[in-house]
Image 1 (cartoon, rainbow, N blue to C red):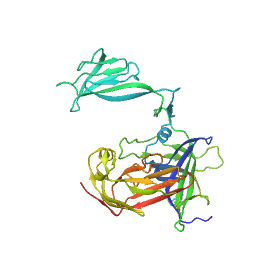
Image 2 (image 1 turned 90 degrees about the vertical axis):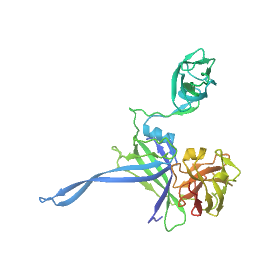
Image 3 (image 1 turned 135 degrees about the horizontal axis):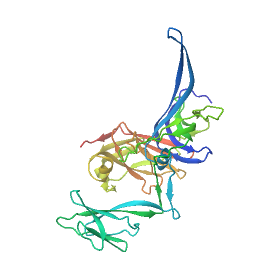
Image 4 (image 1 turned 180 degrees about the vertical axis):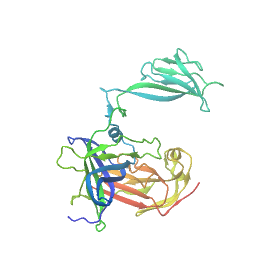
Length: 392
């Protein structure tokens, strides 16, 4: 095997392992990744201060990346705290917040005793008084809690229009992620499965980047809105003090591992009918004359500035697509925009409807479909230069 010029196209998957080779996690949304190696020089100068020799004694390295989506395993690894999984024999106390209209009754039989708190909210968003538990519901004073059911005061001219109820309950199905100030990440092994291309070859091939001693960075920013869901995943490349080789990273190029580029692992991309509603929005409000021909999507995308879709993703242009004829051997089908606004490629293999709504911010973007059978993957790109994006 001979390799000359090559370009790494994307990270397909990352796997973290402990020192005993046990798998800690695997993620498939890493992007914008880079390895930086630096060395500290020692300069030898003559009596006039001229550098006559530079000696490098050690190297240091860092790995930087972003996950296009939040992932519990990455949050867990960066925090250095174990993830806790709720089960019937491992109940986890969790909060719950619900709202109830004035005069309404709500079943909160799962509430832990002494944890129920109620506050009124007026139509203009102003807060009312915090209510105390009592035997009857009285405006600005008490709420009633009888046999696991809570009753809040009735509506009135000077009374809140709704009430917010917060309480704790024990959960037997769920996750608990915690970041403690006295816990930090531990050293692990990190392996990246990457797709790379040789400019003189037609097919994508696989290479593996291996960090034998990777220390995740505990610094993180968790974005809590859909527009910016990227999560930084960075770390330091360490060397083993006790080992015989001071390895920062290794890149493996197996000649037999390729990304399938034939026609087996593909699926059909089509347009959702205009009479269908997705996310409570008629598809006809999103697009007009949309068509998928070969590897190009053409048509007009209307401007949407109201409704659930615009509320979640922000006003803009959206297209509704559906996917069919997925190969039976496929274990993963990921679809989305490239570049995306942060959602990356979305897994649809378990989606019963096999459709979705995608925000288009520029006709220079590509719509991407990646189908995998667990061993090989095929990536198909659709050109969007033939779309017309209407303005507000």
